[in-house]
Image (cartoon, rainbow, N blue to C red; front, side, top):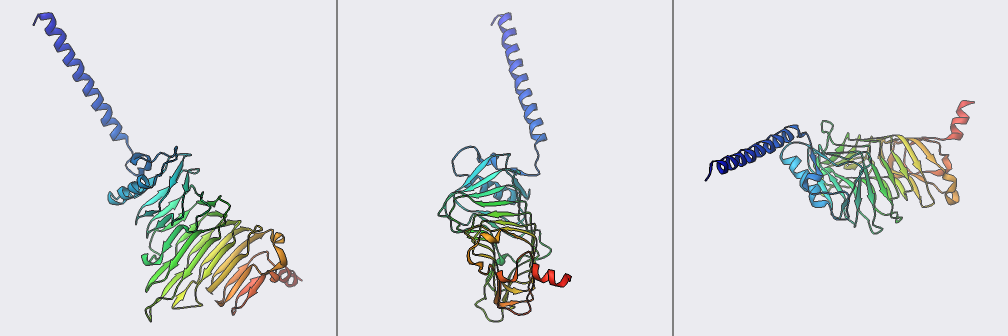
Length: 329
């Protein structure tokens, strides 16, 4: 090899080595600048800009966040992700959407199950399929959720835009021995277009002398629109299966021609405080608020007259415009 050829050869080797060093340095800088405080679903193959099912990518991101103890999964920007199978948010994982990120549900299945110490914040969950007849967000009392747990749902919009008025927006269920959901905060939720907006359901356990209950939960600034049944609390008056002490404050309920019941309540000491809009569009002045035979000491503060209320329970209290007017004299 000539001297000139050697110079060219070694110069090329040096140049390639320098490029490799530079690429490695850039990679290290990128890795060092990466925020490891959360997992992004896009890193696991979710797109948010096509029509493919993002179930596997989203669940893998949740699983990785759980296994690595990172604890947070994020969705990017104003995208629309698609679910054709239900996901489970594992214990200790927060699912955080962008303010206008959409998760579109195609099919009929329980869309999101929330475990103890898991949470959802922000975003829009939209039902696209008119055959959907399941729950959008579901919590099960088998998790034994209590006051010191960090389970929460906040600033989420849940829509059924299919026009079917089927399914349940938010479902809390306890039905086994020692199963309970208590002291969870549900804040700034908007639920529209379902058969049932919010359902609290406590079934009697098969085992004797065992209890199940859904007690002491807070629903703060809840908006319900165009549901057949807006709030349905189904339990006995007390143990062995009860739904008691649940607090609905800042309620805004918009009825539609499809609405049949605004509030149906069993259990004791539940409180409802808010406004119910446009009841004049409902036919026949039928009761839209019902206290069942299994109800006691529940309280309703609203703008609804007593002619819209059916009370079969004991010691329930409800204020009405005509009563307020009488008391003010």
